[in-house]
Amino acid sequence: QEQVVESGGGLVQPGDSLRLSCAASGRTFSVYGMGWFRQAPGKEREFVAIIWSGGRTYYADSVKGRFTISRDSAKNTVYLQMNSLKPDDTAVYYCAVKSNSGSIHDPINYGSWGQGTQVTVSS
Image (cartoon, rainbow, N blue to C red; front, side):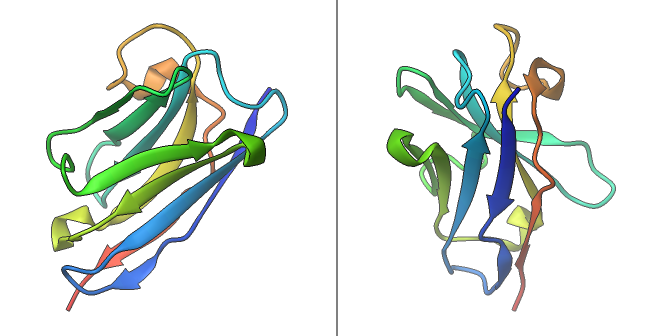
């Protein structure tokens, strides 16, 4: 079973950038891929981005063009580069292992969730 640990969150101003990291251990990356989700207070956990085992990526419309997911297989680490941050991006960001072939948008299809890292965008 994989274990993941997120890091890199913080308090930034609108327009700033942050890079989140997700370090995986154990069985390393899932055959399906690795995803990022986020959850704002009072809201459901929402899909942000995924990188499949073959390297293909997919993004939520709300972050497309601003966020980039990537990975370093040698370090068993997945990154989320976040540019042009907005206050609406404020949330706890989670990394998770895609555990089956179900919808990429549904958290139920992911396992090995990390503890999350807080991102706050505020002036």
